[in-house]
Image (cartoon, rainbow, N blue to C red; front, side, top):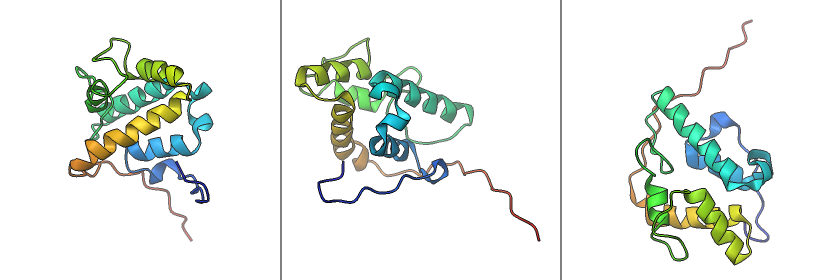
Length: 143
């Protein structure tokens, strides 16, 4: 989140987002636009849809939230954190919402705090791969 006194950046177009983390930064910037009722269940559904689209379009992009047959690196990391269960069949969204309720904090704020910690500890240590997809070409005006 922007610190007090820092200017908020302008939203970006979808074609400008490099990966799922670019999308999540847009969610952080304007959560009510992206996530109905600011619900982590809805965010989880959106991220699942993102992963399904990666698979359908054969896009090779590092994805930390869910992969078929695996909870994903974020969830596996989450279960090692204080105030989180060792695992849960209910998933990361439910458990973060429960933790947020216990802490009397908005669930999206808790999610983004945890996401920042995860990225600092795990994701940033990995080499960054560039997605192998390109934005569709825009039609050019002819004279």
